[in-house]
Length: 268
Image (cartoon, rainbow, N blue to C red; front, side):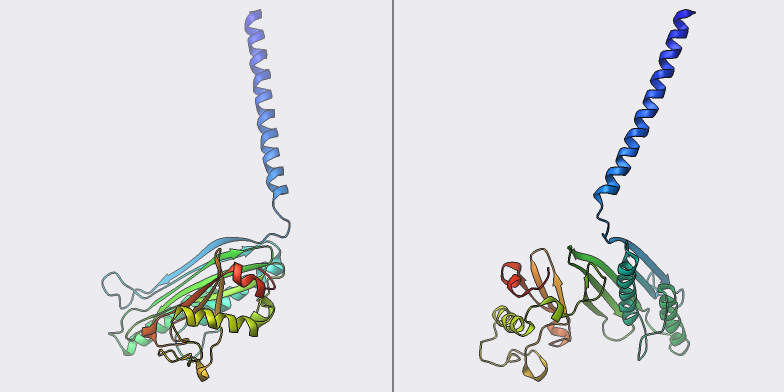
């Protein structure tokens, strides 16, 4: 009987110690995680939205909207600025008509697009299903900047759809959008440098018209693209289809390594 009592006490002490150890380990993990995260860090998590019409489907293809965005969280004023910009960009893409809708949420945005198709189909019953895809990803993030790439594809009838990429560059501390004047020390000097790289890649002789090979730069003058992406390798200058050429010409791009671009950058 005495031996049973001793064994029972030993088991009780072991269980108590084990629970205390587990509690201590859990507490330590929480403290370490909390301490290691920068107080001003902006985190992102993918947020997905989708809607589909049941009208006018062709086999398995129905009119649809699919939107994926990286939802920012952290310092509210910073994350709100980024999230609001992302929504406004999506709203400028997902619409049918002469101008974007006044939707105030992703759900309203999708509802409006689907409703536009279903309304049109009342008069044109053979209308082919529409497609709208927006996928935004955080492609580059540093202490100074956050660069989000927005890839989109739209088809609302016609010979073909349109796919394009947009670059959204934010100040990582404030969440405000950055312009080229904020990014480059001397935009004019960088433009001249970029033109040399562009001519070299696309075999356009120096001193000749920038449009001599069939491109369509306005006023026959080289300009920076509407979208520049920060990548691991360097700056990617990206011209969407129609930006400086015909649809058949496709997108044009050049990559400038940081070893060459750093001299022109204010931030990276």
